[in-house]
Image (cartoon, rainbow over all chains, first blue to last red; front, side, top):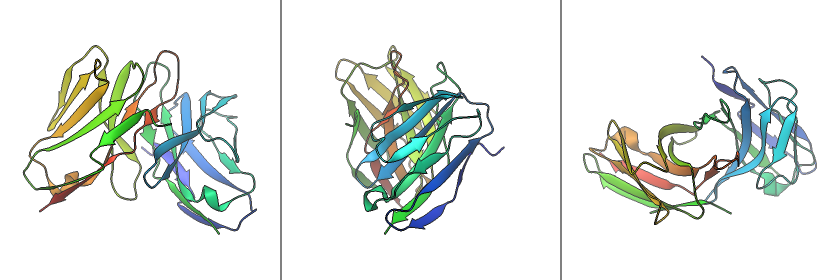
Length: 113
Length: 112
């Protein structure tokens, strides 16, 4: 029972590089979200999706792109990495509009030099 | 901006004691949730309380909600070393807004 799987667990980038953080869930959940966690800031929503083909911006979307071509996958793309994007990134999913409990992946720790 | 703010930011207690942490929020809600995060791990759901509920229990956890004061508290009774973690309140989804908004968390340390 995998739940929400994030890859990679750790990543170091140089400023200006691009990369994709992968997220997959095997619970057939409609809703998926990406958060970043910074010290003293809690979790901040980057982008979210309420179903395949539907995405929307969260609180801090700048510098990130998402797409949702399948129910299972919700990748997060960093277009041109900046040191301000050094953070821990969490992907989460929940069943749907009437299901409030959110399930989280283990996180990706990203450093941008 | 953060919807929920936890208080205190950090709390250290002896094993066996009770731990209480508080959450304040800004706007009307349908429900409020509490999550736990162990160091280096993702968040795990603990308990959900709906806006028409005042108190809810789950094992050693007791959550209260005061919608008039826009606040909630999480009580962990008879604490154990394994309770050492960060605890976050989250509001949402509310009234058609699909987002969950998390507070900044309380770091709880249980001293054996």
